[in-house]
Structure formats: structure tokens, C-alpha cells
Length: 133
Image (tube, rainbow, N blue to C red):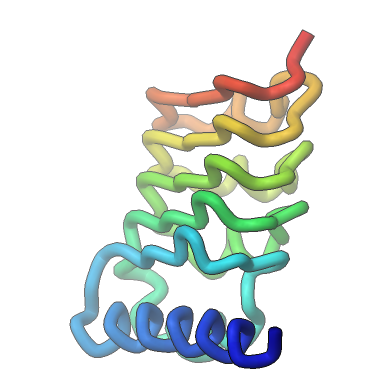
């Protein structure tokens, strides 16, 4: 178990380092078994956070996204949160003025995440396979 956890942590670290070193505009932390967004990543990407336009956190075990995540990555255009355990989004999501697409498919939403209604640039919202009545 510990070795598997160590490998997962190392994989996240490699992906984050690659984003920072290449000043990449995307951060892909899909399939990393994350239960929450790693706090250490905020420090690691501080110098390039403004330049990150796409983040994938698909197929993890996230139960929530924090306001800190939203304020750190204020320039996001695409956010992939498919395949997690999310059931709500922080109000701060409304501050993502450039967000064009969000994938919330395969999560635990029971109703439409209201804060998304006021995100100005949003064009695509995927809520497939949720529990929305």
C-alpha cells in the first residue's frame, strides 16, 4: 500500500514539475487517486498558475473543490472534474471569468450547480451520469 501511495505521489510531483518547468498552459492530474487537491501543488505552481488554462482532475476521488483552488487558477478556461465524488462547487467558481468548459460528468450532483449559472464565458457544462432529478 505504501509503495503504491509513494508511486502516486511521485506521479503527481512529476506532472506538476513538468507543467512548471515547461511553463505549460495545462496541468493534468487525472487518474492520480487524489482525495483532495494537494496543498503542496499550490506552492509548486505559484510562479506559473496565471498561465495555466486547462486542468484535468478526472477520475480521482475528490469530494470537493476548494475556494483556494479557484482563486489560485483564476485564468482557467477548461476544467475537467469528471469521475469524482463531487456534489457541489464553491461559490468562488463564479470568479472564473475565462472558464469556457467544465466537465462534471460521473459525479454525485443531485441538482444543477447554481454558481455555474453566473460564470460569464461558460459555453459547455457536462453533467452526464449524475444524480440530477
